[in-house]
Amino acid sequence: MSSPDSIQIRGWCPSTWRPMQAQDGWIVRVRPHCASLTAAQWLVLAKLAQTHAAPQIELTRLGNVQLRGVHESALPALRSELIASGLAPADEQADLAPAVHCTPFYATGDRSHALAQALSAAAVRYLSPLALRKQSAGALPGKFGMLVDDPERRLRSMSSDLHLWAAHDGSYGLALGQADECYYFESDEHAVQAAIQVARWFARERMTSAARPAARLHHLLKSRTPNAPALGAARHYAIWANEGAGPLRPGTPNPQGLLIGAPLGRVDAPAMQKLAAGLPAHSEIRVTPWKSLLVLHEESPAPVPLRHASQWITRPTDMRLRVSACTGAPGCPQAHIPAQSMALQIADWLLADQHLHISGCAKLCALPADATHIVFAGTDASGQVWLNTGPAGPQQRPLPATRYRASSSDLHDIQQQLHDPHL
Image 1 (cartoon, helix red, strand yellow):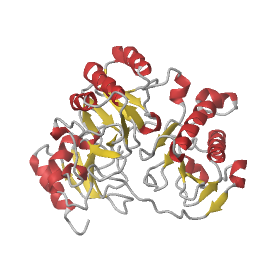
Image 2 (image 1 turned 30 degrees about the vertical axis):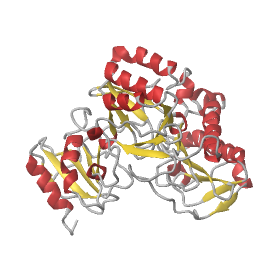
Image 3 (image 1 turned 90 degrees about the horizontal axis):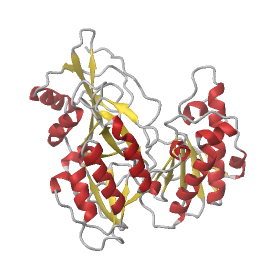
Image 4 (image 1 turned 135 degrees about the vertical axis):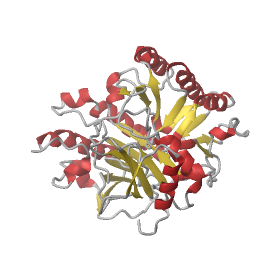
């Protein structure tokens, strides 16, 4: 049986101004404003990936994009090009302000779009490390995030500290952490004001806890009530009325545009270069939180030029949608197995209602909310690598483990365990 190995959990996420070092170089992350980048900006990313990084553009679970494998000497030039193309702010404080993730399903200028713009501006103005320092508060933890959803609530399952949306009845909703309760406001201004007040309260209050500072809002909400006067003017509901519409898969009909995916969320840089070059420079290609892209119809009435078809996912039945994986070895120093190649090899064996996530260690990085099963690697005292396989979610008992042999027999073992009705 495998034993837990020593793993290091980073308490922050990379950005343009604060890249993260990995085994294969530096990771530089770009946060698309309101989930949108133009075709011209995608061309820049594709060029930078092929010039300064690994020739891929990674899509993250929360709708960010990142380059990895960047050489340290290339970081200044890379940052300058990202700023010049509008892919990153020129102000470091703006880049270090909490992330505001946005639904890609909005029309330019509609209520969801306006809410996301207002919240993004307020986050930079009031919640950057420097702004909070001026308010005698510490910086928010690097993983603190806010999310703006559409009225259909497609992003409800996404993890976020503050979750806002424009409701169908004209009001604006706000949910705190992972709580089942929510607040409704008459205007986006009041909803944003309440969100900022809660974030400020969390920045101050988290530092007063007896244990180590709380990393996420829901940790603190278990024992404390936010001091946020704006919440008092809202309608308060104990349970969210809308269960949410859920994610859309690549190839699913969508009135706004074409949804396309990339295997494991890794976009081949030359394939993106060809796609973006075939569109008008101002065309929008939005990033979804499900590691896919939305190419807007209104900007591209002609068929989207999807050359290199093997690099894209355009059908909701594509078996590669049934798997996900972390970076794995050799890119991550804590990974014991090549998680990505293993995931693609086993995709054909999964049932239509299964989603398998493979992780190189017990951290389960990049685990999607819809995963039904997991495989993660660990080591015992002798250094032997073991594969732990079982259902996703809280574990009531240790998962069955098999020796890792770096051969096709591992995949057969995983297949048998996934189809074991007793797991």
